[in-house]
Image (cartoon, rainbow, N blue to C red):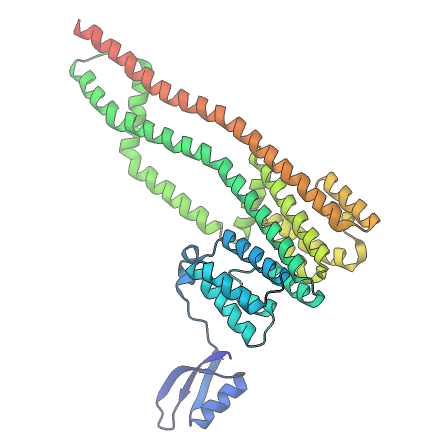
Length: 402
């Protein structure tokens, strides 16, 4: 039952602020009137924020847990195990946070609600697409097969995300290590050498003078540079919370020289896989197209797909509207066109998803093989410049001592 926040006055003129549970605004006003209160303001109460609202990453159930839950539930349904018994068994092996969600779903089932209705109460855990697929599967009596397909899709999607993250780990680690080495050499080793060179009045080579000038500039303006970088980071973070900032970021990701094709392959893979699963399950496309569009994870694609939703669901087909967005490659639109003509669109979309999954793996390997030598050469140049600057100055010091 919804809650309403109110401000009212008693017969003695004393103001009272509070909340009341009622079926609607009129029912809330009537209940307050029966208590002898004169209502001056009433509105739906804002839900109280809980710890997950302030720290969502600390209270987030992993995709791996959701995949395992889906696979286990599909096994129990296929084996004819009662839903309540299956959920109780799954809850015993789940993490404490996920166990509370499963037990809440079980409690709703015991009260007579459907599984989809119970899952819909936990949007942080189960997406709109997940709930819609389960709802249609309940109506068609094909819940076990749908859950298996859903678990397979979630597993593939998670593997894709892991591959993209793993491809970025190596250059990130190399960059951090190189930065640490440079900081140690420049800010700890170099000052000691500079004092020695000044004491013996050694004439420093050009590379050493350049290095010392860079260090002096950094030490003098370090705080200002740090403040500027921090301000820029905050400004970028705030901009990425706006619609324009998100669109600019997603557009930039698609246009990056090496990383852009990887992002595009991942988006096409997810879109084709989700759409194939929706069509295969018999879910009305008008009901789930927004969820499929949101599943791309890219605002540029979401806006273009939103403009073609009415065309696709209104009888214009898929291939034409997809081509008009100018976001999908000719191969994708051609496979969709053939699938429409043969009445096997879900099969062709699944084949397209498999192709772009392989394409994604190839591009990730190509990016890794390209980044490794670039990072190695870049780190070698920086560290080599520092080493040559110090060694050449040491030769000058030795000559001065003679």
